[in-house]
Image (tube, rainbow, N blue to C red; front, top):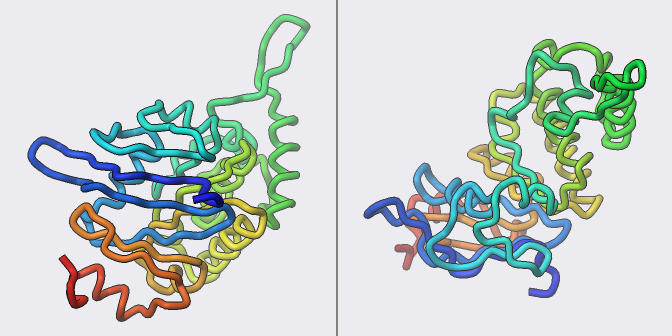
Length: 251
């Protein structure tokens, strides 16, 4: 597929006698929001972990920007431009915004010419510029993340992905446990990333989110792709039928 930034071909993954993924074909185009849906145990998380390098598939291949990344470690896959934002965000609540944007890749400076310390001012300045570009408003970047709202923490996680030039962002339940205003802000951020050409895989059980921001919907059931449809062709009723397997001809 010439415009696909990510392509999974016949990916299979087993855990003992359990088949978690069975010959899955899946792709995401540049600047596309793909909602990846399915009941618990359908294979969504396993597929994402095969893409992000957490799992090694027994069969099949994963390609990113035309190059095979199957079985590469998570650190290499992140360096290539794939960022996964899990539901727990993997942020450090005791650190400020700048430190979280640079988490694991802290900027250092020399104190007295020979003592290496973190350059907090640089990290906050870079974070401030990035947040402004994404239209994210946080009153003080010096406060710890524990003092921010859920939506603000989600925004910081997204900002961190963008700072390190993510070209594909995987979001796992990004609006879970958020109030309605914060949900709207996160959905606006997803649209903003798409407008900047970033591809997004959205895992969500919130149907309204899926209908608002997705371009295409892929539904998994029992380790296989049960449906792949454009958002314009989808209804909530049809999606639910595919998830539970009541569509005529569904496995």
